[in-house]
Amino acid sequence: MTRKELFKNTLRKSVHAWKLINELPLSDDESLMLRHFMDQPGFLDLHWRMFVPAIKGQGTEEQKQKWLPLANKMQIIGCYAQTELGHGSNVQGLETTATFDPQTDQFILHSPTQTSSKWWPGGLGKVSTHAVIYARLITDGKDHGVHGFIVQLRNMDDHSPLPGITIGDIGVKFGNGAYNSMDNGFLMFDKFCIPRDQMLMRLSKVTREGKYVPSDVPRQLMYGTMVSVRQTIVSNASIAMARAVCIATRYSAVRRQFGSQNGGIETQVIDYKTQQNRLFPLLASAYAFRFVGEWLKWLYTDVTQRLEASDFATLPEAHACTAGLKSMTTSATSDGIEECRKLCGGHGYLWCSGLPELFAVYVPACTYEGDNVVLQLQVARFLMKTVSQLGSGKAPAGTTAYMGRAKHLLQCRSSIRKAEDWLNPAMVLETFEARALRMAVSCANNLSKFENQEQGFSELLADLVEAAIAHCQLIVVSKFIVKLEGEIKGKGVKNQLKNLCYIYALHLIHKHLGDFLSTNSITSEQASLANHQLRSLYTQVRPNAVALVDAFDYTDHYLGSVLGRYDGNVYPKLFEEALKDPLNDTVVPDGYHEYIRPLIKQHLRSARL
Ligand SMILES: CCCCCCCCCCCCCCCCCCCCCC(=O)SCCNC(=O)CCNC(=O)[C@H](O)C(C)(C)COP(=O)(O)OP(=O)(O)OC[C@H]1O[C@@H](n2cnc3c(N)ncnc32)[C@H](O)[C@@H]1OP(=O)(O)O
Ligand SMILES: Cc1cc2nc3c(=O)[nH]c(=O)nc-3n(C[C@H](O)[C@H](O)[C@H](O)COP(=O)(O)OP(=O)(O)OC[C@H]3O[C@@H](n4cnc5c(N)ncnc54)[C@H](O)[C@@H]3O)c2cc1C
Image 1 (cartoon, protein in one colour):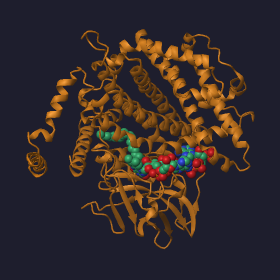
Image 2 (spheres, rainbow, N blue to C red):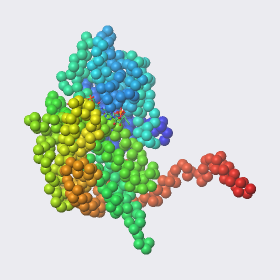
Image 3 (cartoon, rainbow, N blue to C red):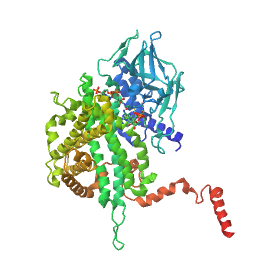
Image 4 (cartoon, protein in one colour):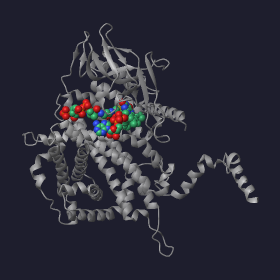
């Protein structure tokens, strides 16, 4: 499809989905499932995942009563317009202004520079009638920082932009199809007025007289919508990883190369240890991310309930966990999809493998909802704060509770003696805890050598990100272990999940061996025992690998991959797909008479001469 066709088709699908949701009707969970099967980014994502939650989280009761019924019935369509041409990561650096005019009781929205243009918001370019806009609030010449506003963008009769608004699509993005179904947009305000009651005022207010009443709750609640979406992105990472792994695993069982003696049957590539060493940790990651996603959903629900009761104690941890896990899982999944493409050899590069499109549509997850490095630095700040409070009497809680055992973890030596010890949950956990704590403490020690903490932080950014990743990996490993210790129906299933859990943990040890050795969390002998155990786990997973991806229960239609077909009938179907290509509509291609024939004839003439 051309971009215009793709966009229009996405509108068609979205509206059809919305109709089904209402007619059947579907529950929230079922609607989300439908969204996954629709399998295309579109304006509904931003409306439901960001616009509605922003009003719910930051609007007053009156604002919610006014706007939510309209939004819930989709009588207005909204998006989340925060990022600008000049600033995305640095939210405090946004330039759009919202100046209160006491004469008219209105805010005047203005884009003072080109870099202040809103740039990127999904659904903004062509669809949304409304947006939550983030702009600097100015009253009486004083800048109060960034706040949210509900703004109507387009005329409800003919969809034309309202006077004072310039709006459009930012152009084609990475890949053919992929995220191009979405109208990511730009927007400029030219002294555009909105009534005062359209500032989202649950947190802070501007009175009729133009007095700014600051929030008595943490101002970071304004970032709440991002926290909520980051949490869902972790579960989505599992879905995307599982999809790529399903394709690569099934195809690896079909594909044969080498190994035949005297013309006998060749080896299935899945039997090569190198293939297993690349594939099975990704299979394990798909399961690991699912379990940590379930846990994160619980954490998010818990913090939301606490916030409603004005208990802000767990907000920093919820922020650190959502930011860190969003970052870690999306980076691993993007890399994992690309690895799956390579695991499928040349055919993985074909569009009909399903992997190029999956990669193209998935990879912006490393950037949207917070650049992955910027988010790990938030985790690092949280860790440095936690380390600095050790010994102050304030015991670390939640995912940093292990830091409360700093004295032990800083000097303990791993008691792994034989390969099987690497299947001991307590020993594995302690190894990850020791590594994470030692990396964090080492950063804190290095930071303390700087007179200026901020300067020290800037100097140590790379180390801090590594410490944050180590902490996030510990969370994923620990939640996998907790899952195993809980209720799992069927001993066989439990055994398989146990194998995957330890593959996940031991492959991380192998991958980050430098961290584990340099922090003395393990010795090189213990590292080689871990490798030995890993190989043995691969052998145990091998007979069940295809069943473990079948368990994701993806239909062929959803997978959209010739290589990942359930029936394994890959080669005839590759031919079928090839023959569908428009280039094969004619035997002699368009352009033959114009370019190829004259070229060949010229050669023939010179040959005769
Ligand atoms: C079919 C029918 C369907 C129906 C149903 C359909 C349903 C649809 C279902 C769809 C399924 C698909 C779903 C996926 C869709 C995805 C679409 C994605 C679209 C993408 C959207 C976006 O892309 S949208 C823009 C995101 N843009 C960022 O992501 C900016 C990052 N940038 C920052 O987020 C800040 O700029 C940054 C760095 C924190 C610094 O913020 P700053 O400068 O203010 O602050 P500092 O760093 O100084 O931090 C000061 C203190 O605030 C603390 N703190 C900071 N953040 C906090 C927080 N969030 N919560 C609590 N606390 C926080 C921090 O920990 C410090 O705490 P302390 O003081 O105690 O140390
Ligand atoms: C597909 C897609 C959809 C999007 N949808 C929306 C939307 O609906 N609404 C919306 O408001 N926005 C949206 N965005 C914007 C998105 O949220 C931002 O692009 C994202 O937050 C990253 O910000 P940035 O582009 O400013 O990156 P930059 O911050 O400019 O990043 C560039 C580089 O600088 C590095 N960097 C930046 N700051 C630091 C630092 N402090 N320390 C170390 N390194 C740093 C980053 O790691 C990165 O390598 C979307 C983006 C994409 C790609």
